[in-house]
Length: 300
Image 1 (cartoon, rainbow, N blue to C red):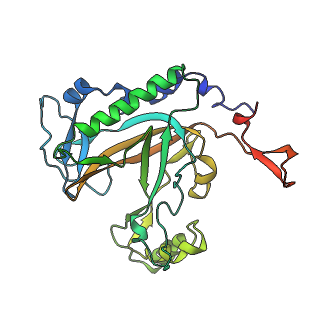
Image 2 (image 1 turned 90 degrees about the vertical axis):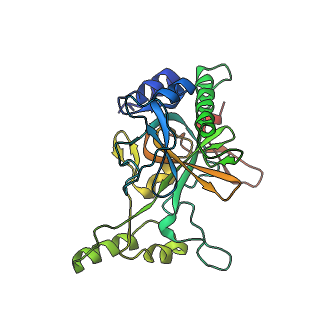
């Protein structure tokens, strides 16, 4: 069977077309003039700032107040979050887009923080290509636009910016759990929910953390899609590293203390554009006699 994604990566222009849509803003289109005409940073009820679409007829304003609903894509007072789109390569380095995300257990076997606050995270970089390829110029536009959005954010002054632009990469995150509202009332629904937590695909080390969510939090729907079909959390680690993906996300930031501004790119959807190269076993053997594992992309 032919793979519909097989030829998608032949040109970066094809990637760009995938992101065009009436509700999406391709990050490479954002410059200072575009920002002034279409976007603004809005102060939300949780004291963070969210990048939003500017209401028609509004000429300026980054001091606007708004309140956010439970869903990050709902902003009151007529403000709509700006949904940005990029295409790139999920680097296997620092990959934490897993069912336990960035949650970890300390050496004293105590939770770093409640599991309810865990985020799945990955860094996205320029797809591997020759230095002269058009893809590199597009990626530079991404980094330039991302840096611009950080620099025009209000109330930052000389604070250091972190969390979104990470060197040559852009960092993406997805909150794994959400509050249950309204509360679960029936015993049957409660038991079904607790079974869901018990079956959440984390290792034994994280099972207690997961069960501690109780009836207050539930897993969010998987934002990963492959050929428009959802990818289950148990498959994230196999599907995403070294894959080329299209990411739709929103952007917000918090002021941390007096020195930092922490930016967060919150994933709305991730679509696999090109599968990662499978790991195969070479016929040759290493000096220790074990088979060598390598990616076909790296083989000559």
